[in-house]
Amino acid sequence: MSPGMDADLPAFLDTLADAAGAAILPYFRAGYATRNKAGAGGFDPVTEADQAGESAMRALIAERFPGHGILGEEYGAQGLERDDVWVLDPIDGTRAFLAGLPTWGTLIGLNRRGVPRHGLMHQPFTGERFAGDGRTAGFRHGAGPVRALRTRACAALGDAILCTTDPRLFADGPERAGYAQVEAAVRMARYGADCYAYCMLAAGQVDLVVEAGLKPYDIVALIPIVAGAGGVVTSWDGGSAAEGGRVVAAGDPRLHEAALRLLAG
Amino acid sequence: MSPGMDADLPAFLDTLADAAGAAILPYFRAGYATRNKAGAGGFDPVTEADQAGESAMRALIAERFPGHGILGEEYGAQGLERDDVWVLDPIDGTRAFLAGLPTWGTLIGLNRRGVPRHGLMHQPFTGERFAGDGRTAGFRHGAGPVRALRTRACAALGDAILCTTDPRLFADGPERAGYAQVEAAVRMARYGADCYAYCMLAAGQVDLVVEAGLKPYDIVALIPIVAGAGGVVTSWDGGSAAEGGRVVAAGDPRLHEAALRLLAG
Image 1 (cartoon, rainbow over the protein chains, first blue to last red):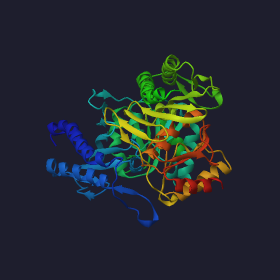
Image 2: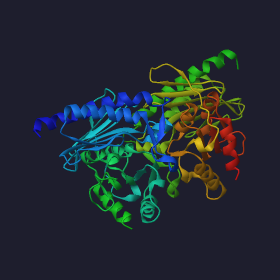
Image 3: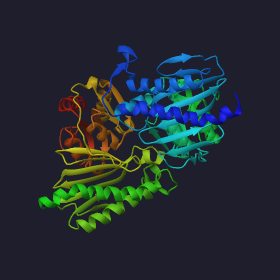
Image 4: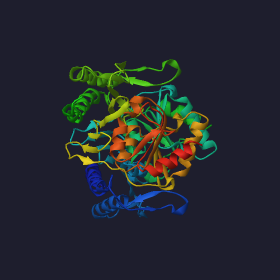
């Protein structure tokens, strides 16, 4: 891939975000059809909005980068063996979306040989956009200027603000116990953030995010944003978070180490 | 109080919201001083933003309605024996505010002889405004048109979307057990909504809100909004919710009855 193509990528991520936002936003806080992806046994809302958003992005990627692979929440995987693979979640935070809360986001990530290289989170209702490439990260609100994202220093768990989407997502046993130890050690824990938690960590508002049961499309886009802002994202055992699963993100590497120790039990 | 003065009240609530928003917004996602209201034993964030917002509203009320009482989160009570008492929470959802999440709001309520008569929730970052007078309720986003708020029909717990701010706020024992029964019965439960939960109930996105440990300023402003949209808000024993404490709100009176039965144990 030429350097010139790489330089164009941030603008292309913006184009994808614009298209997904235009497709999704008419469904937000409006009547829409849902069906039950998990079947009768569970409730995993899928909306026409999700599908409309992903279709819009897939069409643009196929036109611009026909040689790239795509992994999306709604329409599955194609070409995962290719060097460049887009990882898409049109609505991260489907439950927030269903409840009408503005804390969902469109996640657009690009892996190169398995490593997250570019990421963007777009909230089309509030007009917020967080983007990063692992070296830098920036934020824009509406038509405002791009401002650099930087994590804040916070070395000790006792000073940290922790976010997690839902404490019920941790499996009974060591997983829940590990999370509970971290929650008991921090200054404050806030539930219900979804992708916003990682963006607020990149913005220096939140110090720690601990989650489990993530899919790749829940996290790939967020890794270059957090890393670009100076933070650290890994699995609970310190490895790559790009496959999802158990994920811990911290704004300060010292806090990340302290959290890893507690999560290891 | 003359009918003419009553007719002016919605515009005056808008004026209060504008003033509070202008005072608070510069502190959102910016550095600011906090002190610990709960002392060493707990963490109850109080910010300069809270105080700036409440001061701005108190000054306007004192000028326009010197005969009214005021109950505010930050600066306490004055004239609670008067017929008209303003009930103010400059930042409902302080933890969301601290974490940088756009799910806090400014709550402005007016009690007449103890009954909530007017209420407004303002989210100055997203530009959303929800207002009601117990008979009607409306929503505005930015400079957009005012749209009527209406709750949706949802008679059965098994079909309901439930919101609560934080499941840790329920006291051990019957309170937590009552909430747990409701959570187990609903289709979906979402944490972390604060005042947004009631506004989304008024908008027909959420069916049920169950909370405990509320202060009057957490709920008074929201009662005329929910009631004006066709919903029901009471204490867990079916009485007035205006004093806070244990609160249950439903968009459909049938769902409210079903929730009351479970919460009674």
